[in-house]
Image (cartoon, rainbow, N blue to C red; front, side, top):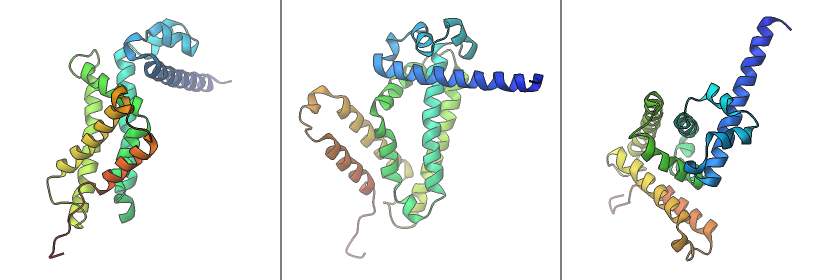
Length: 213
């Protein structure tokens, strides 16, 4: 094996190990809560030494933020697909957004908790900025899609952020209900209920017909 091949192999192994660390860390955060998970626990789950973790990530904050950025980048891929699609694809925006957020409500809740912790004080301000930049890109994509739908007469002609934050509020409320022990006692058909909410999301903000229409 040549020196170049050895370097390439080591780089691949480094990336695979980093991926394992992020995946196992996420699983542990979801299972135990981020505050109870230590670097040692992550290292044990991956099957490596604690010191190896620090070859990839300087702090737990970096792990948190890398996971949050990946989540927002995955959402960006959804928006890119919808924004470049046909009319019927753009019309599915609300449902796609709701489904993405609600597909893994525990992950959404985890990142929401971390948001409050990390944006006020963190050891990785540059990653916080990258997270905000990724979200800003998502916001711009949303606004572009919404403006197009408004121009087509499909959505109410209000500032685009009305539509964006209404969708966010629906998702946030749905996740809160998902985790509420009290309200869960009343929701006998969870799948049916959350599908009902998704359907509301599809219609939310649609342009209302008037007599003139």
